Length: 151
Image (cartoon, rainbow, N blue to C red; front, side):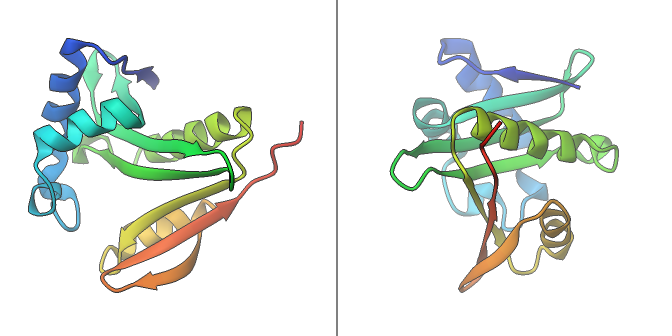
């Protein structure tokens, strides 16, 4: 799998927006029930690190995270998802490994994400990768993983 960094240029906003629309129905809850997807795509490209995983020439998902808390060195996954045809093939694990590696290189030692309480499949997956639930936020659970950034 090839993971491409999306530069903040004209064509990429549409590319991220298109992928979020394709993934929308598979998120719990749907992205569109919370935010405007075009505005969300624009915000991600302006403020987050956004990557599109590719298999061959096909975009198959999205990984977007914030790595801007230089005090606590906490990085936060805002969006991670794969189209159903690409799930169950180890690609999500590669995406999380890529995220963790990027954080290590930048000396961010705390990784966080939120997941809907009813998304048991995702919760189990994140736990397997070392994330632990740290806070009940009503419909969502905050999960955290601490990593060692030395050598």
